[in-house]
Length: 235
Ligand code: HPA
Image 1: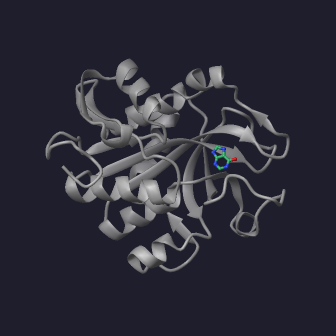
Image 2: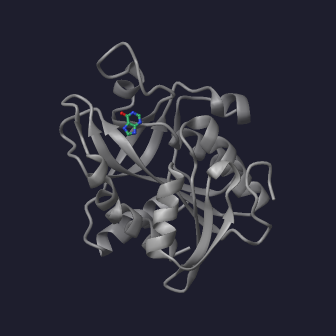
């Protein structure tokens, strides 16, 4: 049991898939895993452990934003000896070169956040994915004939803002899209020497205001979930 996760030691697998939304975690557990056990529901942030094609995998939510994923990923890595976290989330595209449902594999996260500096003394605005998960995701996507684009993304603390247009940091680091968590996940993994990757499905095109509708979301996320699960088999 950690401060924010009720699972006992040993009840969480070495590889964790981490969507933002607790109900997404439940959807994955219900539809993709066998022998599922709910191992934590503290704050309704559900964690499940089950079997996928013979391998034990856990799936649980990060919540939204850097502070939330900072807490959950740190406790998973340090209290439950998790080796690999694959975040599976959605993002808003800054460019209409990307299309709804496109899959992105995050190479680097750029952020204005001071999380990495104040938590771990990691300087700079750009943090790379950690370990071999990023490469395995690309290889697995190829084997599954799924298109996935490696890219830099902007991890922002801000969802609603006054100014329209692309924030300066996103332009500076050539970020094709924005989400709110990868920077803290990568910072924790870098500090702790763990594996961390982020796969994103484009759910919004910011310049044109196109969006995946609520009822399209479940179907839209299936390729990303399958890609993450098939990658997890290789750890
Ligand atoms: N901003 C930040 N995070 C997001 C967005 C967005 O527009 N869309 C999906 N996740």
